Length: 462
Image 1 (tube, one colour):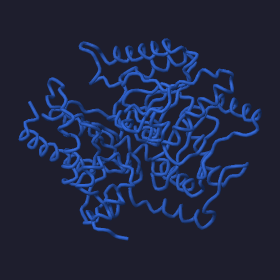
Image 2: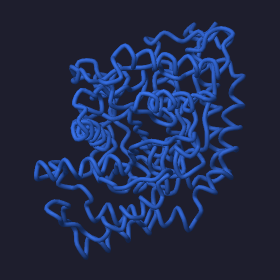
Image 3: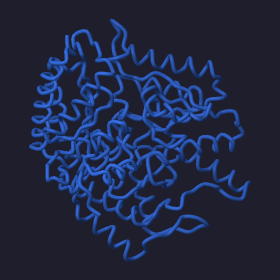
């Protein structure tokens, strides 16, 4: 079926798409229907071309027409199109992928558990936290601390860990009383006058420890964090932050879950965000770039102490009662294996390191623009914070919808980006060239100038 972009049929179908969409606005405007993709560009059904500045949803690492991934899926579909991982059964691509991932882990890990999305991976990690503490005789150690503005998924459990109110409102979330919140580590917004980044990081760690002590360390099971916060606004941790946070966790025997769903597989200039920021987690979640998002697949790494406890407990119970129909599906596993081969053969991490300065330096050129308060980023992920008064760090009123307006203007200029409130996110495919980054920056420069003219006309800037 091929519907016109703004037809009622197309609008009805688009309601079923995951997009964190304002449905009222969506109904009046209709969706942008993407018809094809090539490299770092996508094309709508009218033939308009866009640089995909967010790699789909932070995820299409190898671009939109990698033939080796298509062929890998085809080969596996012709050989074994499906099998499960229940009752001591598995398919070879699943086994090979698990072994490959263990070999790539940034810290020693024992096993990999497969799911189908980042949200499911986080849900699984939560279940392991609770299972582990039951297994070692600490049944009260179940609370999980997440951060304000964190994004960990949209499942009932993973959305409960997510620290964005827009993901909770009218959904009756969070659903569990086992979730606690600690500081968002955004120095630009929450640093106090005269405070250095290191002092701010110390304060964040002290507040975390205070929270743990107030709750009772015997009740706190885990802490979860993204190396770089993605949908919360591309927030890069301040200097010494994770060093101090991890010291608190170790002191109180609290598991650390690193959510690498966005950062994993080269995004920050290393294979893992854990390597970029010296993290030593007990569990790691990953998805998105694991298969370049050509097919759904995610994974949770668990270390040996968690595995051994789970093995012993499942022996007592007689079963480890967890899994999904599509866990370790052989076709996505085959595509993920080929994706990892391409990363190695083409030295994608090396490529990211070589072109990241073009993006990071280019984005920082916008720091003097009248609409821009802060520019931040690392590797091939970046954020631009829009402000009504850049000198006084005065934000726009949410009702002005400046961020979404800038996103719409960018699309008119042939650039797809992501507005998270008034924070604009950039996360292009890892294969992007320096020339295409310059074109992306040029289109965003025109967008900011268009937005400034609009904002001045609306009386939104000082």
